Length: 260
Image (cartoon, rainbow, N blue to C red):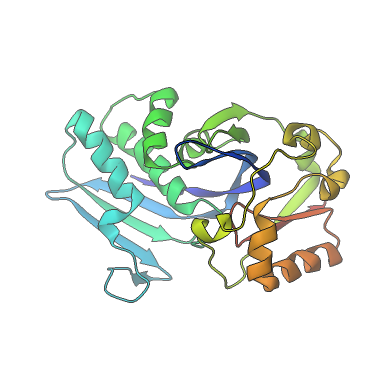
């Protein structure tokens, strides 16, 4: 069976406070970005195996910068369900097209879509509420992709609430991927958590034309300082006529809304 895990974008991202467990309380609006997607195929096999490709090249962990395929979140998703349901061996083939280190949630999407795909393949009949619980064990962003619909997220990113944004129907979204990879650790460096001057829910309720002045991504301050080229991309978006532009997540992708 084959699916296409899609990316996500953050409309606003406020780092509200530091938690006792070392994580941070956030507030953000996650929206699906279906124009960007990976390709995930899982089939039953005689023994477990995984192949991960990027740009047509097999990522086997041997080259500098490659990750170990066995540490991929799709493998962790399989192992998580296998502990509960004694699944047979499978072969996973993953073509990664969503840029890594761009704040688009590609790995989280792969994991959540793998959970759903395995549930369907082996007739586990897991409801979304259970898939959400499993997804939360794999990563903070993973539960969003179980629903893959606009969600207002709080906590460390795992607390979800449906959120309607009819205003976006009048805009097209353009995403730019500068040749920069930003780690979560780097993005948090220098961040001082604090509640936003205007709560994000209130800011998002205002006309889109006003978002430029009230819907912010707190990570931009530190990430733009380290990578000025990203700030330049954002300026260029506004120069091209965008009504709103922002970095997604912890970066480095920059997206913008343009009137249709």
